[in-house]
Amino acid sequence: MKHIPKVINSRVAYENAHVKCVVDTLSRDGKTWEQAYLAKPIPDIDVSVIPYENGGVYMLRQYRHANRCELWQFPGGGGEPDASIIESAHRELTEETGFVAGQMETIGLTYNEAGLVNLKTTILVATDLKKGERRLEHTEVGMEMHFFTIAEMEMMIEAGEIQCGFALASWTFFRNYLQQQNIQ
Image 1 (cartoon, rainbow, N blue to C red):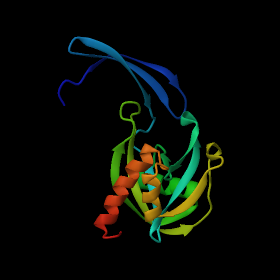
Image 2: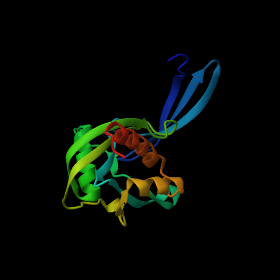
Image 3: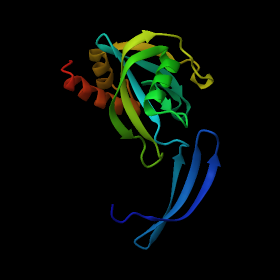
Image 4: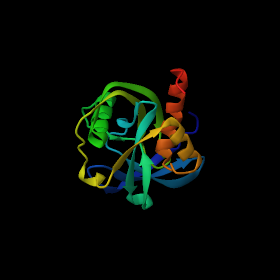
């Protein structure tokens, strides 16, 4: 890539076990500026899992404090230091939905909020679902799970009811997956 800015200074503005806020001073073509971003401890092991069965998907509705609203999203989250993408996907799926997937297939990759977070997310489809026990984290209070047919999902998107960019990106990859599988 040409003209990548040079980092001339970097400082951590805030840090906890889940994230740190980094402020870099960049320089290119005689100009300098600051760029703040969130640095996840394990930026390459983040997953979005689409639980798919019987012509539909399961979505979660949960409160997102940064946006002060509830959003429809797919199960997902960050990985553990020694976990693979697939292991992380299985853990997040079971934790948030109670499902255990017989099959887990990677269908895409996305950089969410590329100017703000160093996060790369793998999108997966979970099939052959068996119901188990949900193990929500304490931060997932009030998380609801609902099943929607493909047609219902399309109507919800068209009506603007699904507003999470992360969920919409995952849905884009999922629609392509359905076309490749000759499923409508």
